[in-house]
Amino acid sequence: METVGIRELKENLSRYMKRVKSGERIIVTDRKKEIAIILPLEKKAKEEKIYQLIQRGMACWSGGKPEGMSARIVSRGKSVSGAVIEDRR
Image 1 (cartoon, one colour):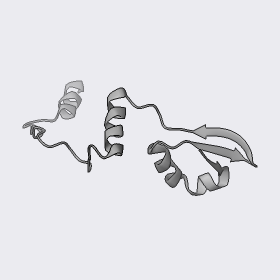
Image 2 (tube, one colour):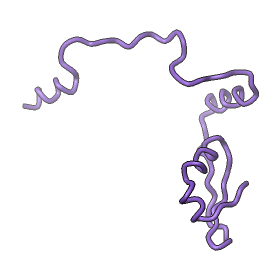
Image 3 (cartoon, helix red, strand yellow):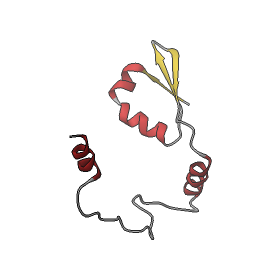
Image 4 (tube, helix red, strand yellow):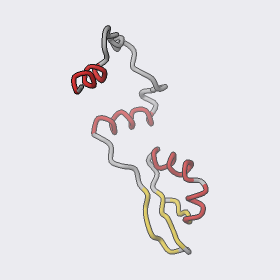
């Protein structure tokens, strides 16, 4: 686990959050005294298995929607929110 001071953490928060998101744990210090640990939230079992497959190089994902998903349904007429607002009048 890496140790980082509060000032360094504040100045580079995005960088450290990316590292936590990728699975790292970071110890936060205040005047060289450990005060906290930042760690990623537990993932669901399926998500964790998929993440492990990606890390091993057995699967890959470049983002976006999976192939084969049905197209979005286009609705005609009023939107649901419009209908609700009209009904409240």
